[in-house]
Image 1 (cartoon, rainbow over the protein chains, first blue to last red):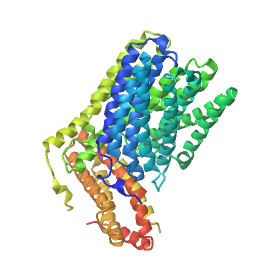
Image 2 (cartoon, rainbow over the protein chains, first blue to last red):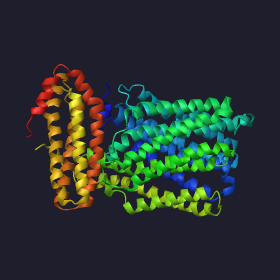
Image 3 (tube, each protein chain N blue to C red):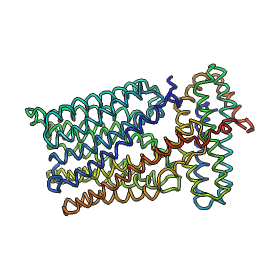
Length: 429
Length: 146
């Protein structure tokens, strides 16, 4: 049995997840500016280049980075396996992914084939490296708990989503393949949202809600079957979408209903939590639950309106559900990692988790973020809302950047000034 | 008779309950939470000692691994003891922010610690000590906290 996860020396160094976490808001800020300089009419089409570029600044740069960072951090703790060469691999793949994403955004926006080609090489190498080492760690797992199972399934969908994404990027370099674009893009986005992000979030929620909020544990049925049922739904949807389009609604309804059930369960577990505290992270979970419910139903409903509402679905699911959960988790994970690593070095009198992020700033960030989401949705009907929402979004992401950097500055400061090195705590009285 | 894994896992849940009760009381008034804090602190200390003085000791003797997983778990016990102690001081000082800051940190540390134990260490202990399991559970049950 692998025991390395039990040791702080073998756990990933704090820099491995942090470099992904701290970069994520920068891409969100870039996305905010792109929205600001675009217009509502262009963004109403999911296939407009502006929409594609903005979506990917967020999905790769923000969501992808946070999910990859979290996988490197959580696998050792949850499954007791070590990710091979974690520091080196995350460092290199991080550089490739950052530069690759930047080249892709630039290349697509300005139609520069060379830039897209560079992006293709960097993104494929970066993703392959990090997905491979995570997969290598997963195959060594002996005790598969529901979270680790969900992580594995999610990683599979992530690989397929990336493969399709690379193909799609290639269609902008060699336009002979462009006719396949919309069909692949559809599968790419649905599998990315529900298969990669959705399943990963479900798996992590099983652990995180009881762990952070002392919420009741999820039922065995939920833990054992939901991921399988959703995966099946995604396959049914793929089949019907490609071969029996008239029945595509069945696959959609299947996926949406399970996610809705999950959203409801999440809400109920939160309401039944034993911890009385209601901080900004709890609000984020609530928003995620509501957005997931609305987004799932709108996605089904959208089928009857020639995909007119698909961008609204994307805002609800991508922004309201996935982004909300990621931001909420950053507020917990970063202070904990800072505290944990400092404490493990022997520093005892360090700020507690709650003292590392200014609560007022976290609340301001939340309010601005939610206001921008609501604004984006209504910009559908009232285009002038787009500008003010984009500004609200940018400010909220700048505050987020500050909020996640603040604990890391504390970490640096403590390491530098060495306020105490209290070994007395290590003697057991 | 439950196995080592079942016994200690159930005890984790018991400590979680005490933790939740303590936070619940503290949320209303710190002054009313002292009793609940004592209960939690005692339950936790008892759990630590059952592991350190009985189960870990048996495991280390049987496997010869003294620098392995048990050393790491002992280290995390030290971290948690320190937090529990500081929480008591925050209670005395009637500092609610400090108290909840510490309890938040302890909660996450405790949960990821429990997870490692339940997923790995207890499973290993059960494999290595299955023959002695009833005796070890019995010893833990009758142990007097020092």
